[in-house]
View 1: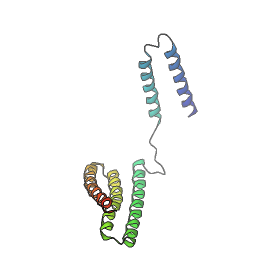
View 2: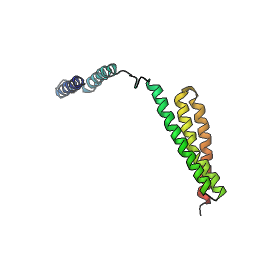
View 3: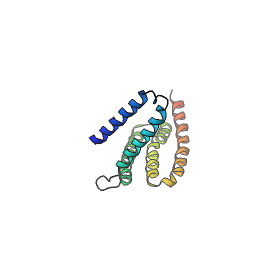
View 4: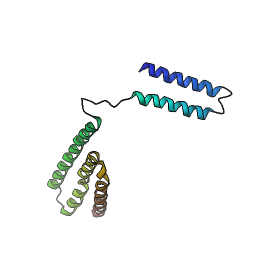
Length: 146
C-alpha cells in the first residue's frame, strides 16, 4: 500500500512540475485528465472483489439488508401494538396505524429490490400508491388535532 501512495505522490509532483512550467500552462487540463485517468485505471485494476467470511458481497448485502428490514418490521409492529393498546381514540388510531405501517412497507420494498432487481419498478409503484394513502392520513391527523 505504501508503494502505491508513493506512486500517487510522484504522479502529483510530476503533474505539478509540468503545470508550473511555461509549456504546461496551456495544456494543464489535458495532461491532468489523461494522467488522472491512467492513475484511476491502475488503482481499479489492483482492486478485486474479495468475499468476506467466504460469502460473496451481494449475498452479504442481502443478508445485512434482510436483518435490518426484519428489525424495522419488528420495531414497527411493537409500535403498532403499543399504539393500539394505549390510544383511546379509534379514528386517530386508524390514521396513525396507516402512517406507522409505512415502515414495514418501505423495509420490505427495499429488501425485495435487493433480491429481485428486475421487479423493483413494481415494488416502487406499490410503495408510491401507499404513500399517497399515508399523506392523506397525515393530513387527517393534523386536521383532527385541535
